[in-house]
Length: 134
Image 1 (tube, helix red, strand yellow):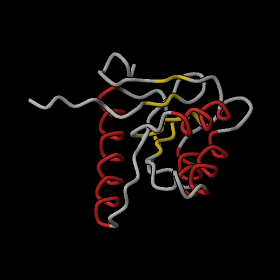
Image 2 (cartoon, rainbow, N blue to C red):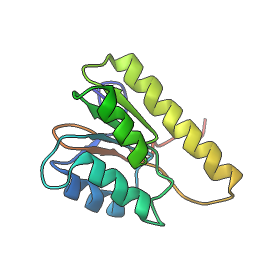
Image 3 (cartoon, rainbow, N blue to C red):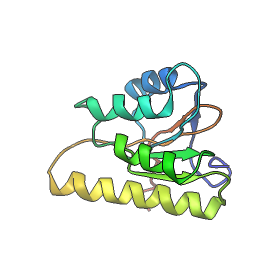
C-alpha cells in the first residue's frame, strides 16, 4: 500500500530485522505493526526510543487491536498510532504529520538526525526519499 503511494519501502519480517535494517539504512520514518514475531512492535518502539542515534526517528504504529493498544504505542514512544484497517489517505496523512513533527523538532534542536518508515507482516523501513534538484 505504501509502495503504491510512492514511498520507497524496505519491508522486513519482524521487529528484530527492522531494528537491524534501521541501523544499516536509516529511514525517514518507521511504520510498524504492533503484533509481529520475534520483537513485538511495542518493544521495537522502545528499542528505537532508547537508542541515542534513533531516538528522534518518527514511528507510526498500526494495529487491529483498537485505541487502547494505540495509546500503549504512544506511551511507548510512537509518534502516532492508527487502527487497521485504514484508508491509504489516512495513513499518508499520519505518516507525513509524523515526519513533519520530527523534522521540526530536529531543526529546532539543531540535531542532524534522519528518519524512517515501514510495515507489512512485520515493520517496513522506508529510506529517505530522493528529492530532485529541479
